[in-house]
Image (cartoon, rainbow, N blue to C red):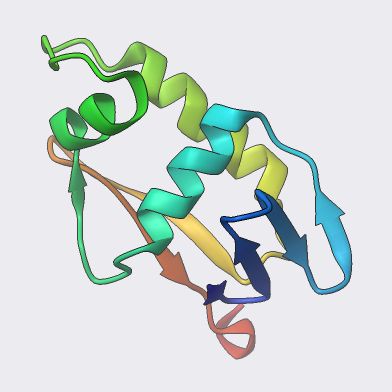
Length: 101
């Protein structure tokens, strides 16, 4: 799976930014893989919580927000993609055009 400058390899649970291996937690990897699986989708908080923690969403998304924050930090500015917040709804992954920066 390719997004921006990332290559995500779910079977071996690796993410490469160019030729550099990005180290991330299992939860960060799962979140990235889920978001990358459908780039045109805004993933609602409830769907992400259910997929990552296998529990129902009860309105508190602090744990999810913390995971997103860590993932954004791991991706950094050179990944060619960003995790975007959709206010009051959830998150989506979007490829970033380097020429627009």
